[in-house]
Amino acid sequence: MHIIVVGAEQVGEYLVRLALEVRHDVVLIESNEERAEHCAQTYDAQVLHATIGEEDILDEAGASQADALVATTADDSINLMAMVLGQEYEIPRLISTVNSNHRKPLFDRLGVSTLVDPEILAARHLLDLVVHPGGETVTSLSGHGVIYEIELDAGSILADRTLGEIDDDRALPENSCIVLIERDDQQLFPREDKQLRGGDNLLVFSATPLSQDDLTLFADQDE
Image 1: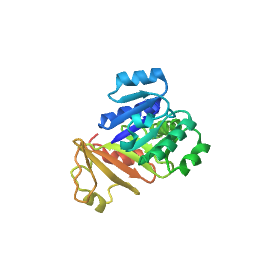
Image 2 (image 1 turned 60 degrees about the vertical axis):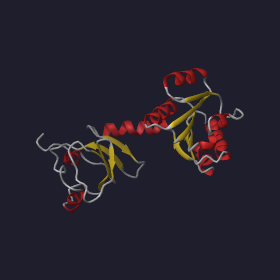
Image 3 (image 1 turned 45 degrees about the vertical axis):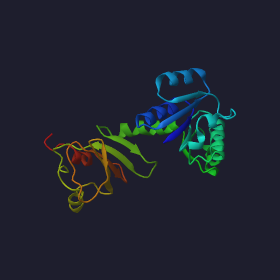
Image 4 (image 1 turned 90 degrees about the horizontal axis):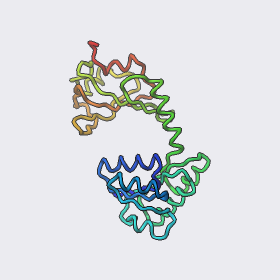
């Protein structure tokens, strides 16, 4: 994908790094000279030291071939301008951070996908780590459930069993299910005949937080 990122503050720089790691084509537009120079020296991406409002800057960034435009600055007016310009260029996916919740309707009217206040999202994740201690990664879904990333131990009672068998025995906690299996750098979608193996990384959705007793199902039973 060809992705244009506007803003190289913390969220924007992390986005550039992650996108490059999975081999997307990234162009970064950054108005701060020091941040632009840092990113140009650090990442294998085209970095344009400019503001989003400069004439022809999106042409230089390859907007006509862009799959997505993502605005991540701390200034909602700049992010909104980027989204309006993205619409003019008919970029298929327009995504923006929104720093003040009361401005979100402005972005909604443009049909923009938004992330409101990334700092709150980070704080929520930190709270998840406090409330759910252990080796698993936990992400709350704003009142709509919890996603756990758990490595399955070889000695777990779930290992070497198919998902169909696990479902028949109701071995998983109530209101939870395995939504993805990651094995040997491959993503495997859950089917009844798919057998779990020790070392699999599992994405587990639960409508309610899992207890520590629930999480022991995924651990070595001899421990």
